Picture 1: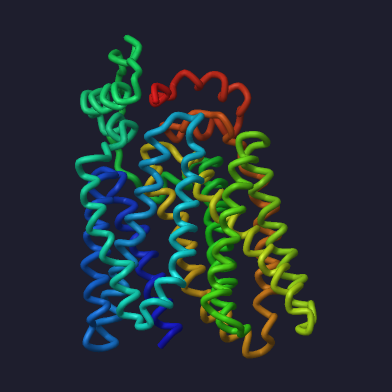
Picture 2 (picture 1 turned 135 degrees about the vertical axis):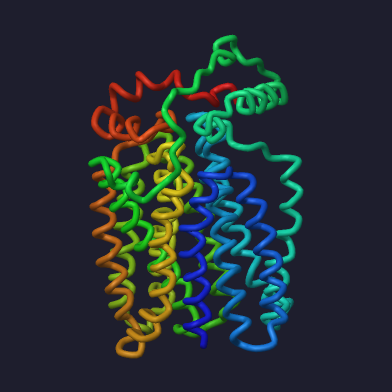
Length: 402
């Protein structure tokens, strides 16, 4: 029942990637985000008071669907609404994600029933409905949907609140005559660079989720104080975010992305063969693995968002991250079943997956300091001629007024 409960939640994430990822690119980021918050709150309450296991599973699945819509759409909005020099805020968001994880064992300790924990993590979603009056629609998305007037109005408002003014050429924003197209999977694999990026990102998402969730759930197998061990393993994510903040704008995205995966893999391998009688060393190396995979997980969010065009960004990131949900579905079965054979066997699998991922991400183009691509053609040019394209497209960042 434990395996099935976790798998159903991740299956909901998977369904949400296809449905709400598509909806955000077609109907707007804010609308999708607000409906998702409402859905998470309502379904969470029903889960807490479910009269039987079947109802519990149904609404846990739906909570996963809407949960996917909240965090992916939120991340895309933030990335699109700032200029190229401020996209590091995507990592800052991850810090608050970590703070939430660190608070979770405290909530679980104070509220010893699962129903209490469920309500504690579900009810706050209703507060986010207030964002309707605070957070604007993405100007980039509005431009791709031929709504230039609304985009300009939002950009003027943001510039005003930041004590800046739009230069005259912003009022001359033109929208191309191409027909507005709706997102589709074929658009992600039709051209060579998009196809390569999509396949690598799918594998990276799958690997990150499988290893991340596997290492978290492994805490329940190795004994010790579950609350304290969970808190410590969550706290290690803070230095992971700080390491990303000090590296990605200095040395780029690709190298930290690759190194973090390889370090996670090697740490898992070493942990598997360390003897139990030096538990402190075993826990230290395992924590290093958690640090590495956390960095990889946070960087894949950022780079995936940067390497998809506005017309496909939310759908593309959601679709690629659906492999993350597949990894989450597999993780409990893989961990508990292989651990029954040998407790450390899952760590060997994690090592192989992570090292391969570290090598693959080196094939991605560097995105440091470039403007977000608006079309598939921009992605193809970016991948083929980074240096030339990076200089050529710099002036096209429509959010540089922030």
